[in-house]
Image 1 (cartoon, rainbow, N blue to C red):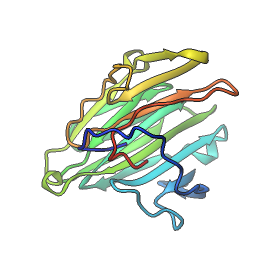
Image 2 (image 1 turned 45 degrees about the vertical axis):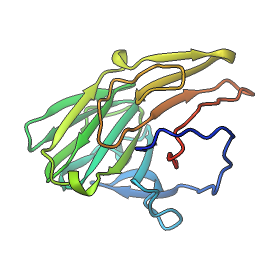
Image 3 (image 1 turned 90 degrees about the horizontal axis):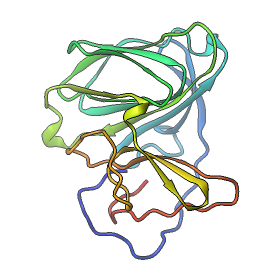
Image 4 (image 1 turned 30 degrees about the vertical axis):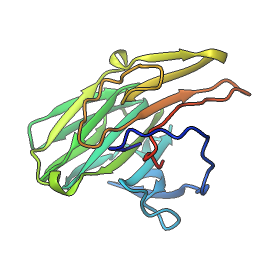
Length: 207
């Protein structure tokens, strides 16, 4: 969720559209579901793409995403299960596992790879692409990586748990990702059956 405006809506907003994810594959044959960046929802500014991946079949993910270029946006990978190694042309390298997040700013250009560090078991997570403002598309590439233990968990009534990956919630919990360019709010919300989650958002947030 991205904004540069601090105004908050005082009333709940309704859903404008419900979009079904489209099964597809990317990289070296990784099976995934594309929500943003498919014919039914090409883009929700500034979000260029949102993929979800989940499989316990190695043939669905084992080849990963070999070295490939990016430019002018940010790639955010949040892992729920499994292990993935990131390596890029700017000299960054690391392994993320369940509960970790990596936030790569491609800026003026970067070549990177994401390869599973497992030969079996469940691999699950999300990748989000966030467009950079025009004046920052030629910035120096950068990389942030945060393990699960550095991501705060906010507890709310009804047994609701909120992992705050980026931004600050209405309760004042701040995530570890430092990203002033797009001012994101990225939450992983876990709700028990029958519970309702309410969060005040800046008025310019659109997804």
